[in-house]
Length: 130
Length: 414
Image 1 (cartoon, rainbow over the protein chains, first blue to last red):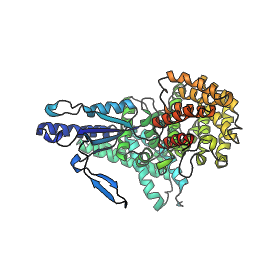
Image 2 (tube, each protein chain N blue to C red):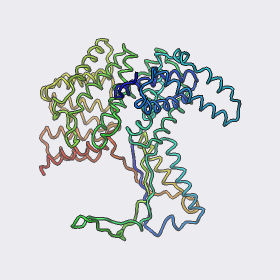
Image 3 (spheres, rainbow over the protein chains, first blue to last red):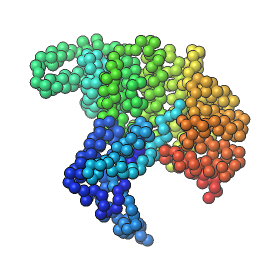
Image 4 (cartoon, one colour):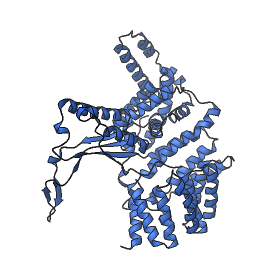
């Protein structure tokens, strides 16, 4: 069964960019290691990191159907920083991976304990319940 | 003997995969390397044969190519360790076709099936390994069927083989006693492959490799190897009797069409008659199991002209039997539907209440979907709409969600 793990981050200005080099490297190394491990276990469908929110645009169709772009609303507190799509044997395993992501090292190497949103991907009914 | 390459040739080639793997694995006493090598040989055949024609002795060709791959790997492995090359040379010289042919064992496919469906493996690993080692599918085809990257599927398969290695499963046929104990796991894996194909053969998944057909092919092969086992026949019958309704299950916009609204003229009559014939023969053995009972239920549906003309008392009796033979919350759920058809929706709703206390199914969307349907039959519009919506929020299937939302909208009258 497939799940998406969504990692939210505080809006631009805070977070990763301000960290000391050592902590930043530990964090990046942790994420690369995690992706390798998910791949090695045959559970990784895809993992993507997103650009910083200052690159984000809100797009709507105008009256003529043409795109009308706008900056991000300043009141948005959180932005999606990245996501994983995993294919695992149980929801418990998905939560376990989410907890690992959540505990990624932050400043001083302390676990960040970020909230990770886990949701099933609409990939069909469970195999069977017989 | 080169002729046109078509689906039949592809099936013939796939059918050779487990025989070839058996011979190579026995020769080199290394299942994991042999399995990788056979995969390479299969890919070579899939690329070369359609263009250059099928070789005189297709099986011998595959065995030779796969054996050469194993030797190559061994040699590079040895070179890596800077050892003598004597072992590799010796192995290479002894690869004569006649000798290899003598290595063939008719039980190989069965040995592989029991190995790949080993209880030590998780269902998803067992499915992947079975499709490659027994089904002769390429990693890319399996990855495509499950919509995951090929590299991920390759890892899953290689880990499955590692699990088999560490649990020390020998490359031999389990004793008749062991076989009885482990057959249910084999049948379950085949059933899961079928089910995966059947439930995903809708919506955006049309381009996927047809797992239902592959499951039917593998189960046919298994039946040929275990002709006297009524449950193997029962499973094959169940697959055919279910697959027969495939064309009627979805509408023009790929929307789900429930059994009671299907155009039954679209049902595949030849699959139905084959399924019924298999089932009748299986039932005469006298040891009834869960697949035979489910096939019997499918047969009762398939034989009816419409929902109204369906023999519901017989279906109810079969579910009562199934509840005794293989109790599960899903069986209780289906039993409640049959009871509602015989004794009215109130009876069905009463039976469903027991499931609310069962953590295996409480909160499952099907429970709400069935409730919605029964409330609708009772004329309780509000409750029906409410449960259709709850079910829609809980399902993880997109076509199912669309169906349930449409039902709620229809009843709201908007």
